[in-house]
Length: 192
Image 1 (cartoon, helix red, strand yellow):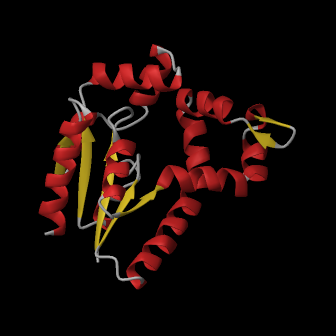
Image 2 (image 1 turned 90 degrees about the horizontal axis):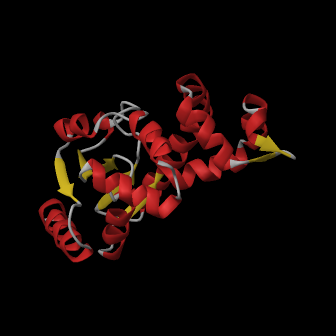
């Protein structure tokens, strides 16, 4: 089985590429999905660490996001809680795919390079787009302000560094049909 890491900066189109890969029959595991799951499983620990982001014992994801994307120390505390859970779940699901005979598994991990995970993969696919386009996408889809986009973008490794470390790059700077063709070409190359 070939294990590939998928990453990219905020608004680059990682989720769209993941959907296109799933449509091609690729097993794609989403770290954000396991982080949301982990936030539920670990909500008492999160509320203890971040009481200002909780109400009635429930985590307010928007409040938590504002807090951790503006405070690097808070972000590291949250990552220390969530990352071990996410990594364990990804390993479990990767092993299930291996046992089921899947030839290709892609792990979609927004902070792949930041977490030092590139050595875990046969290669890393980076989805990239111009910063102005990424900003416009994020602001349109999530309602974040320009300042909130900038804070989140700056909390990650710069796109240029991700491109330097990538095994493969798919540029998402055109329409969906163009992106789909690029994803299909990458898949043919990798799945061979």
